[in-house]
Image (cartoon, rainbow, N blue to C red; front, side, top):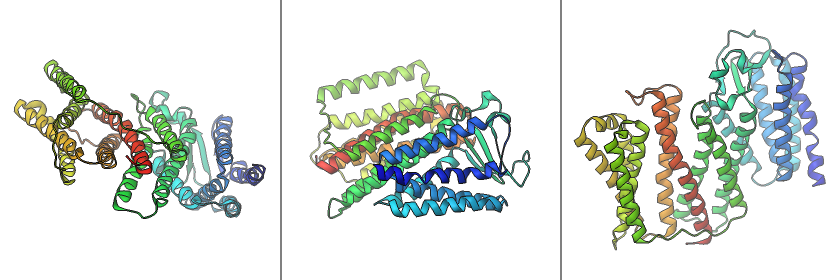
Length: 447
C-alpha cells in the first residue's frame, strides 16, 4: 500500500499543470465561481485517486489521465490557443511514465474504453457540444455558471449548480452530480464488460454458447451505462434518478464479478401461475373498461401485461418438443412492429384492430414462453435477457428521440412519449440486470 501511495504522488504536479492555464489566463472564470470550480475539480481528483489507490488500480488511473490530457491538448489546438497546450502535453508525458511503471493486466482496454464511454455519455446528455458561442471572445477559454445564460427553473436536476466550460467551438457543461457520476459509470461499465469477457476466456475452450452469453451479458452492462447519458437531459419526472439506479446496478455487478456465488432460480407452481394469469387479465379488463387505455403510458403498461399474459399461458401448457430458436426472433419482431406509433394510434381508435393488436402481443409472449420449454437454465436466461435488453434499447431510442423533439409519436406530446419510455425502462432495466446476474451465475457454476 505504501508503494501505491508513493506512486500516486505525481498526481499533485499533474493537478498543478492542469490548472496553470487557469492561473495565467488560459481560462477566465466569470463571476464568483472560483470555489465551485475548485470543489468540482479537486473533489473529483481526490475521490477517484482514493478509489484508484484502494482498488490498486493506480496505473489504470494514470492511463485515463494521460488520455484526458491528450484530449485537452487537442482541444486547445482546435480552439487556436496553442500556448497553453504545452502544459497538458507535459501532464500527458508524466502520466504515461507512471502508467508504464504501474500498469497491470487489463489497464489498456479498460482505461481507454472508459474514456470512450465517458465521451459518449457527455455527447448523449448534451453536456458536450460543438458550437460557437457568440457571447465569448476568442483567444481564451471561459468558465461560467450555468445560471448565467439559463433560468434556474429550466436547469435539469442533474446540472444543478453546474458550470460551463467554453474552449473555442467546444462547450462542456458539468455539475457536482455529473462530475462524479459520469466518470464512475463509464469506468464501471468498461471494467464490468472486460471482467465478463475475461471470465469467458478463463473457462478453457470457447464454445458458441459462451460467445452468445458473453455478448448478451456485455450488452446488458453497456446498455445500463449508456442510458445514463440519455436520461440526464431531463428535469422532469423520475428520469434523473436512473443515473443513480445505473450506478447501483453497475456496482452490484462489479461486486458479483469480484466475488461470484451460485444463484438459483425460484420454482413457481402451476396453481400460482394460473392465479397470476387470471389476475393480470382482470387488470387488463379494468384498464380498458375505465378508459385509462387512452393514456400512452398506460397503453404501454397494458401492452406489457398482454405480453406477460401470453408468456404465462405458455408456461401453463406443457409440450415435449423443443421449439427452434427462430421462434424467439419472430416473437421479438412482432414486439418491434407493435411499437410502431401508427399502429398504436390506430389501435386506440379502432376496437377491432385493438383486439388484433392485443392478440399479436399475446402471441409474442406465448411464443417466447414455448421457446423456454425443454431448454436448460442457461438457454432460458439468455433468451430472457435478450428480450429485455431489446426492450430497454428500444425505450432508450424513443427517449433519445424525445430529447431532440423528434415527432416519432405524432399526435402525442413529448411528455407522453417520455412517460411511455420511462415505464418500459422501469420494467425492462431491472429485469435485464437480474437476468444478467443469474446468467453469469449459471455460466460459472452450472444450472
